[in-house]
Length: 73
Image 1 (cartoon, helix red, strand yellow):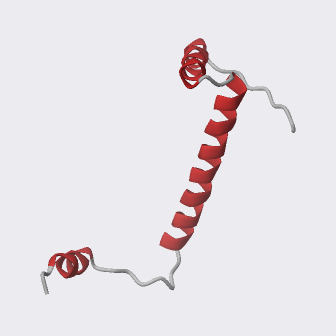
Image 2 (image 1 turned 90 degrees about the vertical axis):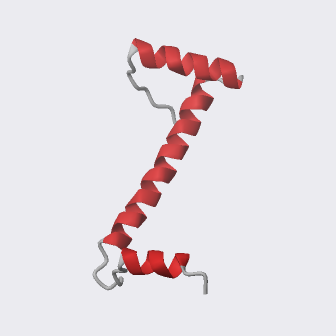
């Protein structure tokens, strides 16, 4: 496993230590989990943006969609 170094503010370090203590995990575990979640979110956002910018994807009219969803029939 590779090791990285990052500089953080004193406040961020205090928050990290508090989270690690509350979760009963090491700093490294909390940072690793935070990075994993960030990268997953980043990947999801990248895919979403690609889909939004896809010119072949049909554009739906929100008012029509809302009426269709709320229509009791």
